[in-house]
Length: 128
Image (cartoon, rainbow, N blue to C red; front, side, top):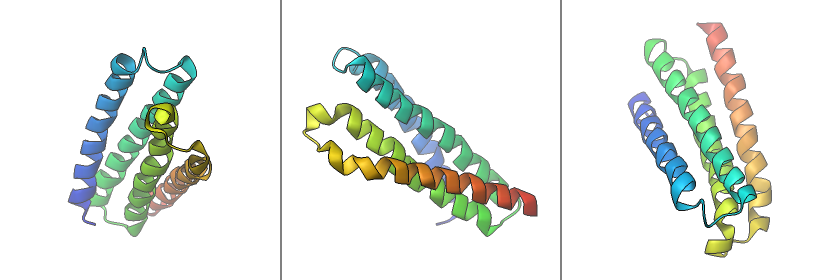
């Protein structure tokens, strides 16, 4: 995937995070328990943080192309989908009849992709 595509996806995921945050604060506030809202907000928070990491890697990769940054971007993208996505589903599982047991292993796998992305990004920074 090209660097331009990663940057475009990053911007889109940033917009989606804003929308999901607002939806949680306004649309789900009266429908979810405080615990479920906390799970939803945790997904939004981690999505935002890793959108910024994606943007950082994309910009640095544009200036100094290294495979490390491409790999980190892939890891962050997979992490957002697995970690934040599973938290969104976990928070609203009562409304969509989604079995929570499927999400059990997906969330930590997403977290591992986040950690891996940060490590690979650090290795790339060391090579600049």
